[in-house]
Image (cartoon, rainbow, N blue to C red; front, side, top):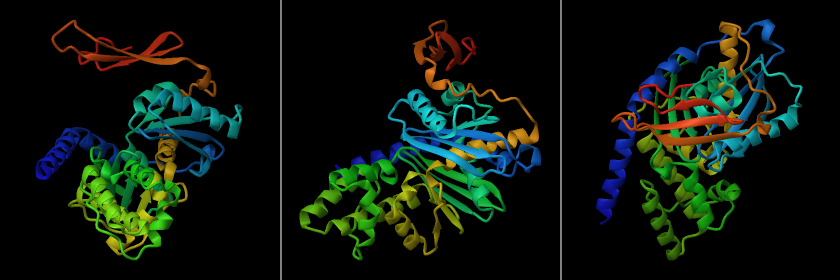
Amino acid sequence: MTNETETNCNSDCIKEQKSNSASTQEAKGEVLRQTNDGIMTDSLANQYFLGVDVGSISTNLAVIDGNKQLVESIYIRTEGKPIQSVQRGITLLKEKVGEDFAIAGVGTTGSARQLTGLIVGADIVKNEITAHSVASLNESKDIQTIFEIGGQDSKIILIRNGIAVDFAMNTVCAAGTGSFLDQQAHRLEIPIEQFGDLALKSDNAVSIAGRCTVFAESDMIHKQQLGHPVEDIIRGLSEALVRNYMNNVGKGKEILGPIMFQGGVAANIGIRDAFQRSLNQEIIVPENFAVMGAIGAAILALNKMIKKPYETKFVGWNIPDLQYETKGFECKDCSNLCEVIRVIRDGKVIACWGSKCKKWEV
């Protein structure tokens, strides 16, 4: 029974990776074109650019100046409501910088980047691989490998000579993500903020199966029942997550230092320590590790301005006051039976997608 379950888990992961291959190649091309763009000009020194990164777990906003330095940032939970989370993020950001703060350009990224782009009026919409690459290279030109672990997905990006040359993503197995740690911390009745500190107190990690959340959780419960100290169990879980990451996302990749670790899980010093011991080298965690995607999106908007000045499409600080909704329907005009999504702002349809024949494009 266990072997059958494990086979099904592995099969699902392989299917997901294959289905992502086309978008992966497209994203790789974007990375190659974008990571080295942008030469600073004095005319942009006093202008400001907004980046918005909306994922399944968190919504991040960042404002940078013309020197690509972070001015302000916001990190909040998406909670399954990307539109409302963007509006709330804009509200919080406006409280920090003021409604008279002028935005010269906007970039969006993340799994909800297209929808987010419509809401805020993005000047550039890019995949998260590109955004994380440019943000990391802005932090350090010497970076050769990027580990990024979020709430429900994880990725690795390889950079050589300042150019992102390869990457891999894992969007199926939660055993290598932040949600896995949250679930286990809750089960152990330990605040996730204390997870890393407790892991460092252990010098005898218990062995935890990390290939699948089902096996990891049952293995952890078994270790609890045997009476292992909670510190040893937590260290074992940290090492299991790192093994899962290396065996799935990092499999077959040439991992060279310096290595930069970003995403929400980078806050966990127990995971960082497990990576360092596994690879026997230092792991760099940037100061703004949680909002690197948003910073990268803002830099991409700045780079676009450097290449060719434009007038921003930013909707404005009144975004929280506007009424947004999405409606889906199945078009039955032909055998394609397309599932079309309409985005509506204040009663007016501003965009549609999902139509293969482009019939419903706005």
